[in-house]
Image (cartoon, rainbow over the protein chains, first blue to last red):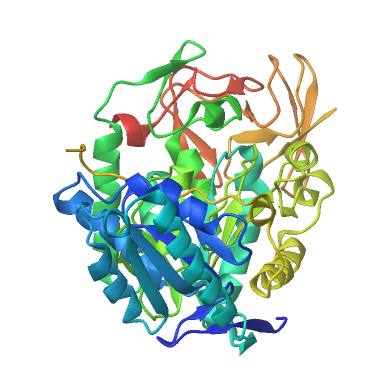
Length: 393
Length: 92
């Protein structure tokens, strides 16, 4: 494996990016955060839809997502922007993020007197932070530093036949080297319970996983189906999947789980956006399959790199963690060249082996870890999506 | 001749890698010897062709695992998709 260079954080984690993050405590100041971060290299702002008008489990999930985004090892410093009347207390959240040892500042618009003074104050702070982070340099880090999220979206037949198995070999290689991989998308493991539970490190982990899948099956059956080309299609696969040739959730899932590899044990199950533990191996995060929400959960749970397979093509990215998009469909590789990072279509078109494509993918993954920009980073894709449980107040 | 791929020797369907017109032969790789099947109908790229006659109620096998069951008798060479396959996990 090629050498890896990252940023060691005071809490022991390792980042492959060194962002100054401008994070709104509530969606009302999303635009303010964007104005602060605009035209400042090394600074990224978050655009989210939470921070107020949520209660109970929904509120806790949103808060955990914001907290774990601030704690993320790819983030070197955080400027929290509050409005002043929101449910999320920006000062408390800033304090919790600061406990990781990184620099965190907090400004509140209703105290500062509106947008213009808040933007001016914010710009002053981020300029200092950028200067401070510029003194940090990458150092060699072990392969065990990698927390690799694996995800698929816009899947077609090529995903299951080529890109997903290739990603699976890379996930196995990372776990074998002492690292961690995170599989998620509970919708897309329905029907593969026997295969996954056989890989679980303990019966407790297996029963937690099975329970999460059962809940998702129940929910996806609870609403009427849509018709696609005159046929009522189950709610757990998308119209694009069906047009692409995927027939049932079982077929989709069997192809989807190959992203999680074949040999590494499943060492734990975490909630959406909950940080994974230290154990090396494959983790499972309970999440929807919906791409923007799943990617956000993978970032928040600690993934410092994500391999994202897409047969049909997607521009998806994330403000904090690099999303490396992979396609096994040659038409997509050609048509969406500017959005695809890795083309493994040689598997289906030229008879290339999954193993040789996996070796090349591992090299490309390390290049991104070491600083090479992904397509979505070049394009400045900064949206996130936090999943919801209940209605808004 | 159009291309197909078989993922496991137990499978009774192959995935076609080209758009297949009716009566065209599909040569599917993946096993020791390519399997030739004549398409009874047009099958779009990425969709599945039946490698054998599949009686109503029988499992549709891909990757060596059931991905659903036949809603009707599916003859060899037919397009296998949502119109003739049900999901046990969605409907049970």
